Image (cartoon, rainbow, N blue to C red; front, side, top):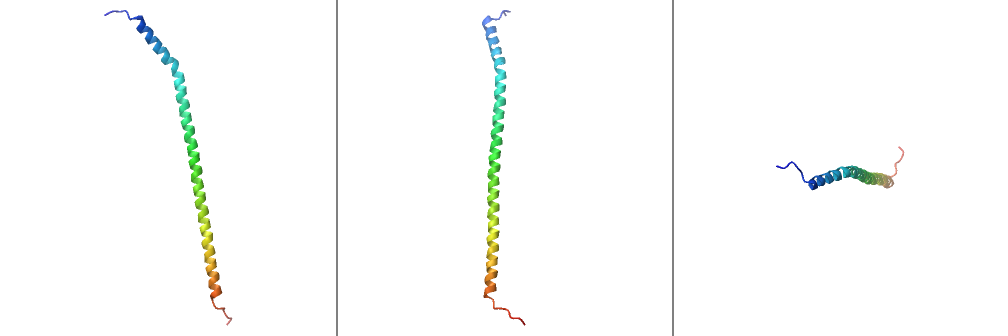
Length: 92
């Protein structure tokens, strides 16, 4: 077994190591930026979802309030109609 290693093999390994070590900071920075972008987009999605849900809750509250007002008005009209159709009370 020869003790000598081909110079081209050594050079190829050195170039590969240098490339890996040189690109590591940019790859890690890119991964950090990608994580930040994902977190920001998730935050925006949550904000839009909360706004949508709050609009639905507001609409439901308005509908319920209108229904109560209309039902109270209907009851008042029924009472008014019943009072008008009842014979007048005489004092005893």
